[in-house]
Image (cartoon, rainbow, N blue to C red):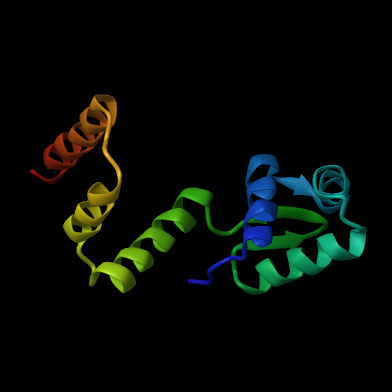
Amino acid sequence: MYRMTDTEWNFARLIWESEPVASGELVRLCENRFAWKKSTTYTFLKKLCEQGIFQNESAQVHSLISEDAYLQEQGEQFVAKTFDGSLPKMIAAFMRSKSLSREEVAEIEQMIDAYKEETV
C-alpha cells in the first residue's frame, strides 16, 4: 500500500475527519488549515485518489480506505520490513529505549487478553 508523505497524511486526516465532504468545502478547509490554493488541494486529492485511498465522485470526496485500515496496513508493513514480521521483536526494541508506565502496561495486557478471548 502507498506510503503517504507527511503533507499527504495531514491532508488525508482532514478528509477522514470531514467525510463525506464536498470538494468545494474541502478547498475551503485546506485554505483555512494549510493556507493552500485550490490547485494545491486538487493536486493532492488527485494523487491520493490515484492511489485508491479516496474517491472524488460528483464533487463529493469520501474514503475508499478508512484511517484505521490504512494505519493497520502501514503498521504491518513496518513490522514486516523492519523486524522480519515479528511483533515481539518490535516490542522488545521499543522497550529497550523507552520505559512503559503502569497504565501503558495494563493497556497492553488488556489488548492481549482481549485478543486471546477472540481467538479461542
